[in-house]
Length: 518
Image 1 (spheres, rainbow, N blue to C red):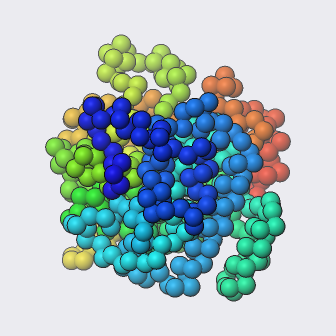
Image 2: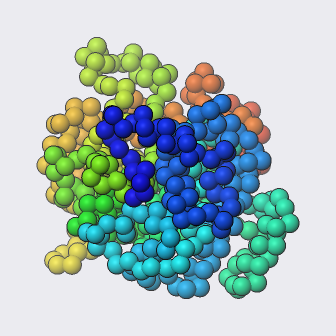
């Protein structure tokens, strides 16, 4: 860790903020500009500044101004696209997906921290020359994940979810793409959506663990803002990519290194919101690989249950493990529920229930007991899939003995789950879902305000699908209208806006409808 390691001691916080303000760049975009001319110390400092963006980008509301500047975020997305495309092509040419060690760029350890920069790390490390693409992507995606948590980041999410046919804003980008086409026969004749380039990087998670954690976080945040557009851009190839990434997460969870284990927990937390949206994605569910994805989710969930110890269910100390500063759950702002949803359901609750249910349940649980959150949220994902018609009776292969199915696997860890619920009565909502999974029945839908995921991801976080509108339910004054044909993956504030958006939405919607009818 650099000399500006995060400290939790209150007496050092004032000094820390003063140091950050002293070394902060003039503009946010300076963090990733002119990389070749920067010293090693400056490269390391840029990493730290991205991790503490909220502490120094406070003058004149810098973050909000940046995310609302269309030209700046378009330029940023363009650069991310070309850098990730270039790195993905090089990874494929060198067949890095078959490598079983972590790359450690010389001169900038933060490009690959936290999985490699620790004496107890079990991953085999391999030193490579400093890579500008890796550094650029780690810095920019760290910033993007923070920008996507802002309520007014719809423009950025739309740019990340859309097709990139019109991405060329200047001659240099056109020339760069022509060069990339000239060095590989696999490069298509026209640009793909940026999500496709992210998918290519996820296949190299073993080599670039920190980068891929940021990639999957960006995909989750984007998919929750623009589910239909994101899933259309990704197509069914996302299913095997996520399956393989979950296997990488499982390897981290099995590690004896605390940093790697924590990275596995946060990586699972960061992918959960994207997995939740698969509940309405009938095209993806009919993919031959979807059963493998179900298996990977259940095996990961069971492994977290197997190693669960109440006393150790908390984030690591930054004083003892400063490397974990760059590995944290990035989905917390997805978990805020609209006050209107709370008020509406309060009418149906008794006074005792109102008192027992803290408004900050989701964030508190995520920040204080991340493993408990991962277990209950993982169960809610399976329950949502079941509610949407997914058959969870999938066989899980084992090394010894007969294979068993999902209900049997969940039943095995029933006591662990019951203990977690007993420690937090607000999690009792998961009991009917748990029972239905074990009994092989269709899971019920949880209440909006009594769930970790359903309320925020299906209601409060959603916006009208018409790009020129993007009203929330609160803005519209009523619940958004679900597009029934695509199983609610797109929502609208009015039938008029649904009709206006039909020309854009109809391709995805019709395919999902046909798949659903089959």
